[in-house]
Image (cartoon, rainbow, N blue to C red):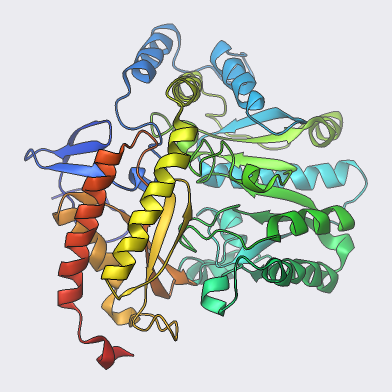
Length: 445
């Protein structure tokens, strides 16, 4: 019997150890971590350099409250982080995870608006589907019905615009007209809400769990920057999943040269070695807030020296091993191999992604974009089959969390072609077994 509870009644095997891209349970079975946990373990497991940095910090101090002390570890990580940011983003605020970071970004944006005499601005527009965290504040900007509906009476839901799901909408993602089509929905929403009330637009540059590695259509990112500038709306990039090199650039928004006003980081930022997240903002946002009595916000573990020592060592390892470039190169190879799997397995309707943030989406009928029946819970079942075969992948649903099953394949950035061979072989075997369990597709279309 376990005294723990999480999402459901299911139990998993007990983890014994993890090294590199592999994990072992207490029975000695080996698993390849094909999703980096929850797209977290960017540099792989048990990196000796990071562990040594953490041990060194543990010998000095494991906690120092930010109102009592500055710490060398937090200052060092802040400096390293700023070095990797677009020009002008020079101030860092640390937290313990992605949901905290999203809340911090929204609250900083709001306090900035109040400090500069724009107190009418409070609405944060985001996209649907989207996922930005599980606290009530983060759920308010999340567009994922299965997660938000139970808590609707407890929160103030904020406005949404459609995510640019060109594939499902039958549009050409390489056509700039498609990017304009989706970006113009943001402008229309700002006008509908009243521009004077809109504070920020929040998005993931490459969609994460809610849309399955959704890459924006041509011209979309550049146009939303133009729209935000036109209306004085802050652009907040949720780089919790895309940041720290996952997409083949340190920040996902770099692929489109789109300047953020606030960057949100977590997951790969400390790569699972310690709970860590952060936001990065420019002086022109931070200083008015500090000048009006300070940032009215904070968490007990903000800037924890042990977490920051881990984060600084992780950033060093990303540089030392050239993992951003490896993510770009291995990502191209992985996408090509996933496309080959799609040719072999007719239930794969779409393959997409950037770098080592990739996914494929199941379809009963790829032509008509008909999803598998939601009652089959294909996203859960496929993950379990792959797990039984020693391959860990991640799944969610593309259509508001209700239906439209997709599988995320996001191995650590240290992955090699040999590892990709193993991943693809595991996927191929699992797809064959999964398809054999399904009814004839003609029966479900």
